[in-house]
Image (cartoon, rainbow, N blue to C red; front, top):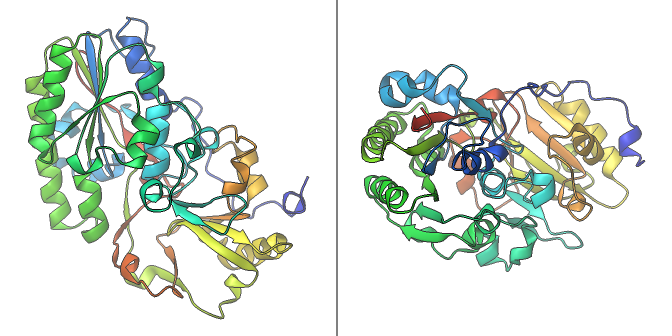
Length: 380
């Protein structure tokens, strides 16, 4: 056992995982089972569509239900799932599309260290910008393992990207930039291909949420567009097509006065070699021999408003699932997950653009982790 693991217990307990909570990792396998009439979650169907609305948490949807009357009305009280931790797109989409947890597939955050190097790489775009090999995503995509036609309907810009190949290889890609066109494409594919699974992706809410916040008028207007598209999808599908509407994470708004800026000379940066993760979920990589000291400093300073864990504590918690040996060193020596409405930024960086983001996610709060599991068509 490492020295970090022998330190005093965390002063703030991790939130308990509800024993019967449905995991995002099981959604696609259960939909595939429904096509064979043997799902524990869904009624039998002839074909199926999973619609991932990026950034639409249950809290966000419930709070703006008047602007999403179709989706809110279609969601039963128990129609929810829990996304993975970290509650970030790279980790969650990989889990949805491989049926595995981050500790197995290895995408442990937005930015993570490549073991044995000082490279902290973006897990969405690093395949194309930094040469991440496809094998960095360790799990086989479900599109390859499920013995059925598998289609991807997404924006044109995602065709052939490294992340698409790493998580969706084996599927046939259909691109359309217009949301309504994407919805119709998915309905048509499901109708024309019995026994098929179609993954429909909508990033519009997440994009505007990051720029303006989920409580903004712009976000609400986009929600209304998404809700209208959902109603259109319900009308367009055949009666024997099952649809699940879900999300990768929810979103919290963090104004500028709630930013924690880590500047040159900040004691919290003593002994820190690299910072990864994202503003609400930091991976902190310590200098050799400094992990215990870094953990102690962060715990003493931040545990009243964040969960501060050592790598060993995070692995033992089970939040990442079983952690493969070659994934452990991708995790920070110290992991800081915001509990309060704050974010952490490395203010030493010249690029201050990320500090303009309003909507944020990545941590363990229910606002970020509880997502819809809305059933339409044959699954309703």
